[in-house]
Image 1 (tube, one colour):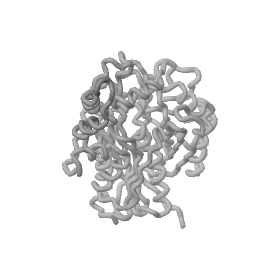
Image 2: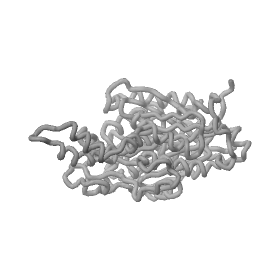
Image 3: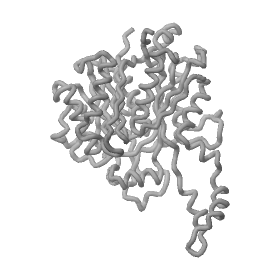
Length: 425
């Protein structure tokens, strides 16, 4: 079967910079920061007190089918509906059996605050009365509310919202999940399984358990005094990433299907690479071979030479290990500064959205191709001699762009790379 072309016809975003693609892109080009002191729970006694929160939270859709909508599902619905409306597919009335939902997702909020009072009430002379804990706990926490925080709920809610009756696929490959979902949706369309997919990622880990866990690993920046400067990818003074939250959704569509209905095409998705480090859970391979191989696979899939790529949206987490590894992997393929294309990390502005990160960054790649401008890496004030590429420091830059690469490298060693092409008919 002839492989089919895959185009982008819709975009949707919820990030710490705001709700909606237009607002997000404007603020990215302004070099704005969405990082601040956490407001959602008490962090006064914690070592890390900052994150990139979505404030205010987008309104729960009136027709949401549960009162306990998880925050990840809320983000997915808002971003997904924007992308769906942007694509015009709702008015075109496609065959619902040929429309899928592919999302990278994490759990919703892991909130243990509700457990404190039942635990206290169930203590008997220094011992825990489990029967009493169950009685108290069930009164505080409904099964429906707990179930709504599971990974799969985001995909189910989004499918119901747009009437997508085709494949529904939720992946949980950590920081690579959003880009992973886009890559798998690309394959499903190319091979004729579906005509259109809402593809992307959604996540929030801004909760007490997640913040404590990452802080214990030493992965988070503790720069509580200057939160807007804490996410500083590729900077010599980088000291960890910033937890963010939100969602990015793209409508991917088979080109002929889009053309027949007169859709506006925003970009074309032409390449996908997927590898594993097979190394450690929390650290990337120091030699970056897994990341390098994923980039090479994406280039081969797109039938491009390295010189054909004009921009790379980096994974760029602001950790010592990732930024150095990614820089070296890029240089082995594209060459040194002056030969390699410009690289930037939008995580400098919105933090690390974990399962949603790669999808939000895919939207940034599409907007860069449309507008012919590179989003900046903010807070790059102290050049690191070991990170010596052009990272588009602090200000956006106009550029002639035909192809943009999107890198996502997740905990567990998942490496996902996608490539988008400017659409010119």
